[in-house]
Length: 538
Image (tube, rainbow, N blue to C red; front, side):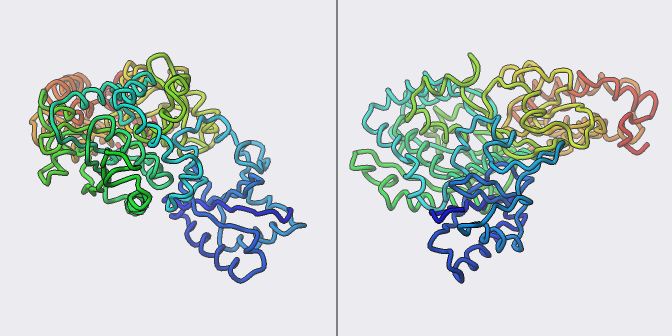
């Protein structure tokens, strides 16, 4: 190595910290304080790099070396490698699973190389607690650019981009902004829905931990576009690191004049407050979330009174978007609608961020173009099925999503294709299941979650999900009866038609898709009292 400045990017996301990355970071600084190398080596904390199962992670720049599963005992060797005649620590490189060949640089690793990282681009290379790092990569340029235009121009640019809400519903973002802009009222609000409640989903958390200013800048631009004066970030209290970094980012943005009165010497004033949710899954629904901020019970409003753009927080027009939706806004303003719409499909533009988990070789956080196939995600980015086993199904959309069978591997991943297959995008969870998975047990697992999380307001959801869970539980225990499959379908249809909010309307998805694609497993449990995957005890 030469004697130029060396930058050590140490992942300080929740995943790496849980593996001891905070101790690695502290050990690095302690040794540097007591060595002769501190004038050449700079240690920087970053957010999540995405490759969570390989953490704790360190990236050495400008060389691009990628060190995995770093321990405190490795620090001395890493620092020694930074000497002028030092060599990289090869044993800490990522090793390709099939050949066991080391891959020194992160941009050569298939997990990263095959992604299209836009929202996540800087989560692993800037300090989320230093606004100057964000400014150095062009942060808040989009805000300055937006304030020199009319609100209508900003909304039209978002509309032309084709951005759809990335919280799961996929409603056109620009159209929602326009509705809020045109809604009558002198007081308006902007809310960021960071209540990421799906089991196995952690992409919103990682964006807030790794690049909180991107979300804040997007919210400020949205506030200007729709005519709002105040914003709220509704984040679950179970995300303490995200909350901490959001607080730091908001305070720094105020100090720099990006938040508060007369932003950047204009007549526009806007501020943001953090509201910590108590963890109720139903509060991810827009009207329940609004009621929660108001200090009320998180009960969804029945349609048609569920349009927050007209009657939202404290009955004022309110724009509510997801973390990733807001994080896309600075990218669109800086690069243009045409740039954004060049990625994705005709109807689903841009990229999608997924938490890739389950029985796949490479687990972690990925960002891919809308329309990419499941096959490419699982076998190229994900490295295939762990243990060399066969793929059985992919579950998307969390407990409100459905299970896609292996024979649909070449279907594109976007809002419309997933809906056609019986599932949803959701907040971006993607669970890979191998041949040893019992699909009846999977349906039972998710129904157990949704029946516990039902707010209890409407009878179809409150009682119907409990009935469905009881039937599924009996089936997995060898107590299934003829007619149970038809009964599950009938209950599903009733719950979806009669429920007030999206929780009830989507809760049956895991059951309906497993029956649709894996009916033979239900029949084996009921008729033969056998679990083909040998998971259920009968």
